[in-house]
Length: 200
Image (tube, rainbow, N blue to C red; front, side):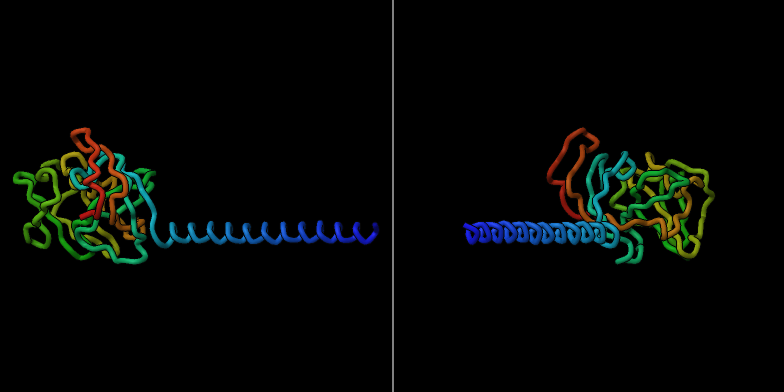
């Protein structure tokens, strides 16, 4: 009888030991997963929602976009970027880089033309010509470590044409928009799955 009790006690202790071993394995896997996800979102990619119509037709309100962290690439002309400047607005903002440090941007509001270093920009991505004037005076030469950004929907975008945003320090750039994961509704109120894909 005593021998059987000892066997049962040993089996119970073994089961308890197995339980704790499995629990610790699961806990370790969970901690590693949380750290991995945190690192991915900090140093890799994140998902950001587009708020407003300033980037139409490229991006629409409520689009969910995949953003590649700015630590992996230097900001370049034409990149669609997500930035955060709390003195402007306390939520992420999506705009397109038009000029980088040392480049001179000029806008002729009478014709809606945008010039970069004296050359007329070819901008197939914009919704309309640039007719809405901000409070910045042009031409503007972009300061070191900064970029000049504008929305693709030029006449419905508050961007670097306004002193409230102005030039954007590259340190405020969270990353580059690379992919539309889930489309919101376009300007016609339609949600088209055909819009899923790379951001140009």
